[in-house]
Length: 64
Image (cartoon, rainbow, N blue to C red; front, top):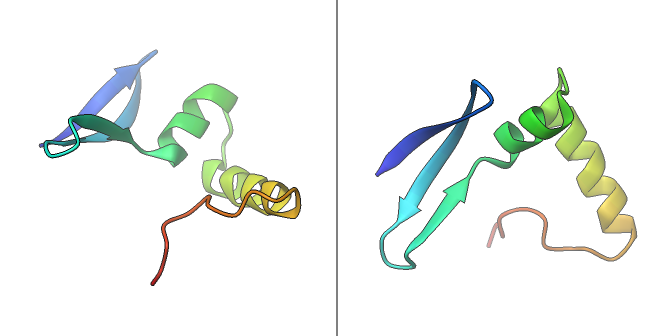
């Protein structure tokens, strides 16, 4: 079940995982709402790079 949630009139994409009984939300949409950034994808990309240099390695989906 995919849904759109509203937060302060901004859309946040979400999906319910029935097996895990958890909601998952779009990081890009959340970043846009919280930072009011005009370029949330760029913000997330820069943040991942910065965190990676500090030792955080699991910031995106595993590709294999």
